[in-house]
Length: 293
Image 1 (cartoon, rainbow, N blue to C red):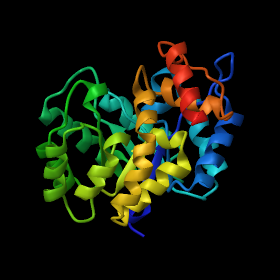
Image 2: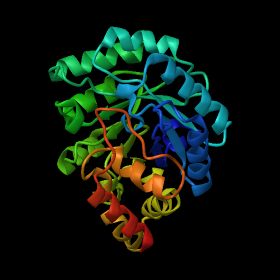
Image 3: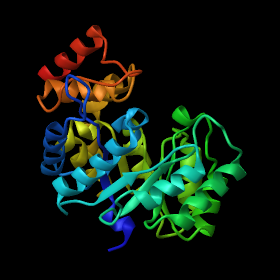
Image 4: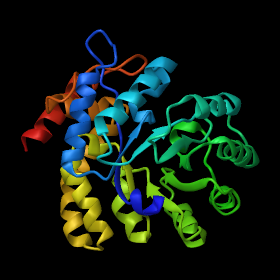
């Protein structure tokens, strides 16, 4: 089965649950993994930005990857997030991390140092040459400060052998459609925006890597499957019911919003590491009100 077939549908960027004293809560992580798989999601991403990776140390990251593989136990594919703005350091990580059981590596484009398009291209080319697994590009200019243009994406997709797909979270529909038009046939292209997943699949995307599915795995993954079957009327009903939740998840910070939902469901504690803080009281009450509905 091709990677594009394996990762078609809903992938979830896993949160990292913490205990009240801010250690990684592996028991809660196990609960989350079971809930997501039972909810019908197609695959999981560990160490994405939603997992608060900027506040995890190297050993914690290694432990989380190892635990995730053990807990998933082959039930669904697992993608490992290895991204950052120091290309040489990332190449070391690609060799150090336990990637044998991963199907791919998701790597966000460099943040903060704002490279040119040529810099972004050379960064990914260097990673792809060293990675033991296929690389999935991740364009998220809202976090990185630099958009990866359609031209750069297409150049990577067409010229660099070990680049297999992309999570596109620019929110730019025209850019997404240009990539869809000109990308190679076996290239995986998924939405990085929950709220835009339905229209982007209508344009031809293969699915989504989701934040919302952490809290609503059953509803969200069913909505995406309906989209992929081109049953957009049924999909829209589910999507309409989740629009308020999408807004609450990103109203102050990700993952503060989604963690509030998961806490109210009894899956995790409502704890984050600074500089991220829990959702403010007024918005948390809106989360409770939404779940009551």
